[in-house]
Length: 153
Length: 107
Image (cartoon, rainbow over all chains, first blue to last red):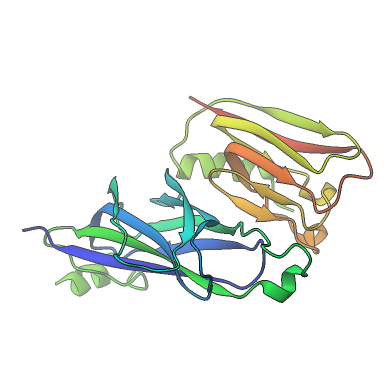
């Protein structure tokens, strides 16, 4: 049976128009990534939905594969959690997930200074990954093959 | 100072990208430009003269986004952009500005 693990990458946006860099290492025992969701988690409050608050781009396997570019929106009322978008990315052990989040919010109050209405917020990228059979997570500090093998056993 | 070309070659090797062509690529932007969009599909463009752009300029592509920082003169790194690339200046350009890239066309 395939074991599923969910991995969360949290991004803090503290400035209008900010570019938040993603540089994240997935556990080495993840064999493939099969889905993702990118969504606003906290910080923005609005009575209406905002279709776009930012753009996200994610690459896998240390920049060998650009995989998705997506819009992130804001939902005033979350009735049900969004479904995972399908991916099928074989992961190389211990490689980086990289990319960026770009805040693209538009000022809803043109007469008010941006700094007045902007509030810091958080976006999360949820990755749905499958474990590689029979492989245990090895910390990246275990770089020596003997140490890595010992940790795996 | 490190060698940009050596850095690019090692990047391509690490990312298992086989180049078909490597050349310089320039974009000349006239006075008054505040936004410019162009395309670089199946290729990488390494920006080599970021210091010539006004601080606060946003360069946004499918793979990377970067705001030119205030201390750009002291930075040595070069970064690549690909896909749809848009450049947004904080204010319309007051002087003609050239963006210079090393273009890598991918096989």
